[in-house]
Every structure is written in structure tokens, then in C-alpha cells.
Image (cartoon, rainbow, N blue to C red; front, side):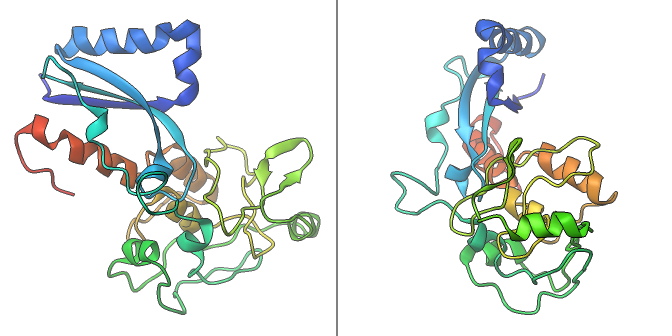
Length: 243
């Protein structure tokens, strides 16, 4: 008998089987837990995440009126007075790397509020290792304009634009291919850069190698989005929510 249940899934679930999948999830939570369930499509960028990531979030609570998604406090985007966090604001302070290089020191201080939030009290830079690419791949990234696709057949694999949020990060499964090119360096992203784009703080260490790091970061719920949902759930829990 939980006080609440939170479930997250991709945006396409809304149209699966003409919406029947969404209705089945809501029925399943109600039948298993006796909770009133509501769902909404949320954009992580509106909650301070430097990424255009839309996900359906289901929230079940014991209140018969259900969870009020309007109680979520948006921090960025239309109506907030603050622009979305950009790739530059998210990762621009991290050391420049070439293919195969690694850095364990920051080299300079944070430049933006987001960078300060992500660093906290960290002194050591974790997971900042560039993937190793063949010369052909390095040349292809270098020749691609930021914000444009690196491969004609794979339009989703772009070189990131410094001055815009990242597109949605995905896991890539067990494939070794990188998803995004760095906007300045001719390489794919480090796991630390992927963590920043998901809003994982710098003290959070990813283990298991580069491919597993991509899987873990791509499949994760951005912490700042999770925090917004958790904060709005506080009245339904009847107790303090600890970060």
C-alpha cells in the first residue's frame, strides 16, 4: 500500500494501441494499489535540464482528486522569465579533449549557475574520457557544422549546438557508436558530458565502461525532472522529501 507511485516512459506510449497502453497502465496501478492515477507529457527542459526530452509521467496518489500536474514548478522556458539551459551553459567549463584523451581536473572554475549546481563541492572530475575514433570519424565530426547531422542516413546523430539545449539522449543499446558530436572538439561526448546534459551532479560516478555509461545515462530520468515531481508530491506524502 504505497502512498504514491511514479512511472515514466517515452512519449510514443500515448499513441500505442490508440491510447490503450496508457489506459492499461492507469488501470493496473489502480487495481494493484488503489491509487488515483493521472498522466502528463513533461518536457525536461522546462525544469532546468539542458535537453529537449519529452516523457510521459504517471503519478498515482491516494487523493481521489488525483495528482495536480499544475503544481509542478517550471524553472525555464515560456512564462518563467528564464531561457532553456544550453549545451554551452551545461558543459562549457569542462576541459577540451581530443579523441582518446582523459582529464581528471577541471582546469577552471564554473561559468554558469548550472555548472555551479552540478559541481557542488567536487574537486575531482569523474568520467571525463573522450571516446577513441578512427581518423575518418574525427574528420567527419570536424567537417560538420554544430546543430547539423554528421551522417546523411542518421539525421538524429548531430553535432551539438553550443547555444541550444541538446536533443534527447538515448542509450544506444549495446552498440559502440556515439550519438552526438561535441560542438567544439572533433569527438563524441564523454560520459561526464552526457551526465551534465541529463542533470546528474558531478559527484555521481558512472561505472561499467563507455558503452554501459551511454546506456545508463540514456535510459535515466533526469534528476532535476524527478526532483520537480517529487517536490509536488510532498503534500501527498505527509512528510518531508529529502534530496
